[in-house]
Image (cartoon, rainbow, N blue to C red):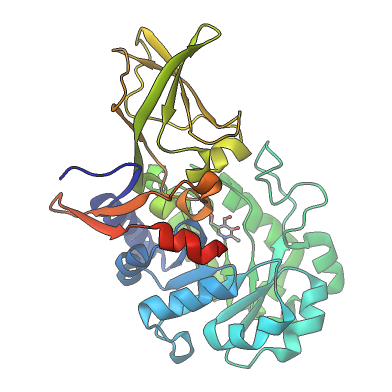
Length: 376
Ligand SMILES: Cc1ncc(COP(=O)(O)O)c(C=O)c1O
């Protein structure tokens, strides 16, 4: 079926494959698995994900509402869990959050002191700790950076001597990790700091950031979880976003103009960095299928907005490009569409699901009315 571009295409087979990997690890280790819906809160993704996991991790009231609405889940009846972790806890939203979330993690001792009493008994309360072990060189991604805003400094938490007042500990320290060394070192540090107090907890949440589908040897993870469950008698959770949906989507765009500028060939696409803002935020060049390392034709691919820096990068092609050619960005499932916007009045991409039988189902098509509703 010919598709109108730009089109964001979710691959159901790849999604199920990622989830099957997680389900196997869950089965072997007893670790509980949450999908971090911030990566892509698309309802169909949530539905496909549901049979493989314990629940969702959320960052806001809207995410918690969507989780419950889409799935008709009732975390309060223990059918499905919704875990909230955010530095942006808003007092006015607290009551509603307690009706929607089975677990709430406080990001600071200030918030814990201020709001813990307002949490109903059947919502499990945890603290997000910053273990102060940095595994990332780029501070823009590093939750353990100096003067971090994410989680309670482990030394302050130790001094406050408060972990026995809560049911769980949460940490999230890595991005796109392909081995478990950071996790093992973090657990080791927590055990050294908090010792037997950890046995009083009900659960520990290791956060997200691990690309389980790209890790060949899960045994260190399985061993760690089994050991923690046996020795501390606590539940272990992971909350994975990128590792569930990152490699599940492509974005297909069409070339709408091509010309020379100061000796370089510039091709304008019918998408832009506004459909994948992390390209600009982190100055990354996204991967495309058509790039050929040995290709003789060098082209700078650019988006069609008024921003001079709306550029994807320079790519090599085997053949000269022409208006109408298709360009396919890969690995755009996580943190892409959720950050997309309609800058310059450019529409958002259509969203398709490529099903296991290879047929395409149109999930979303936005119109002028959506743009009008936002701004009129
Ligand atoms: C607290 C928390 N948990 C889980 C995640 C999911 O991480 P990832 O998508 O890298 O698996 C994030 C990502 O920012 C996060 O901040």
